[in-house]
Length: 516
Image 1 (tube, rainbow, N blue to C red):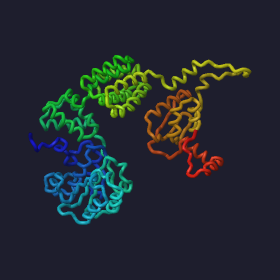
Image 2 (cartoon, one colour):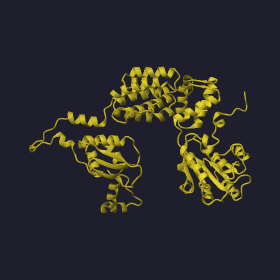
Image 3 (tube, rainbow, N blue to C red):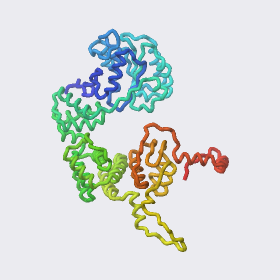
Image 4 (cartoon, rainbow, N blue to C red):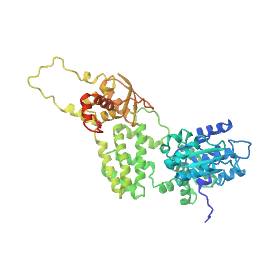
């Protein structure tokens, strides 16, 4: 065995901006900044694991200290003494610090004390602090002043996967770059190139599976490719990758979902037994079912989303999904999605995944057959006969069904009252607690959703169309206008009431926790 083997993720690590894949905006901004001399004193790179945060930091350090040019260059040579030392992590002026093991304020003070001295071999002293969100509060405070006004020869590069844990005082002193997930097609091209360099046979179907399993992370994908090569001896095909990932073929998943939605419980459970006995990981099967449900929803004709071109299915499988969609409602797809999402932690916590999955299948089949709350209420109205009231005055002009439906709703409070009157409890609760209505008139509504429920607009517009008898245009804003929700308005009105105010004064630290 070759003891000096280098894994693919390290061997093919990006060494310059040209080889940094999937981060075009970042590369363009940094190269332009270097070429124009607008080099900031502090940068922070954030994104999921394996997208190139530390690699970008090293490339930037090489660009600043490369000896092939009289000044910083966007195209470091990679062969000079400084470039080779930085790539190996051995340059005296480029310090890579693991914040997870240097969390204390004393560690940060030791680092900052050396920042006052000029670089030994390079133009700049570069401090690369990886996983910076792991620093303690005291360490962050110690870093603040130096980070704001460092010596002219010092550059700070921070990297983190948890940008929300970094104090805003640190963020405001840095130029922030968000590294995006690398697209599947870009990963496939990269893996195919590496397979060619390594003289490995990698089939297109296997490459597709690896790229999608990587979930946007180059490092994760290369680790999987490395594992697949070790398993197969250099002949990586679809079946070997599926065996490694314990995934079922997408054709199997499509057929299983068709059986599941057909209502034949015995056939569905038999299909589960077959898939399980063939060695598939049931957690991965659940993930594939969720993927199928997502794309089936995107393809559903009632959404009018147009042609979906990036589906990970063959033409025959897409045609099969379209046929399933003709007999399955969007409401059914939404319900089974919610059940599957709730089943993920159950599967993770279960000691017997097979039993848990069998019960999930039974639950899905019964949930799919259930009518919606709106359908139940409508059926009750139809089936419930009108009860005559003794001595009641006769109605000279009974109200027609069309008149009851064509209700005018022109403001936020009228909408809340109409939802409550129609007994749309879930929709009413979500609307009054999470929706900030900015503008509203009969037929149009601009709002901000604090929780970002993707299904809210669809459910509300359907209800409004049915209630008012005409189409509604709902526009969801991306930024909060800081408008009170209906619940917050009621709470303010209660607090302003003299009787409630006097009651609150009787109890220390009392507060209104709910409005009903």
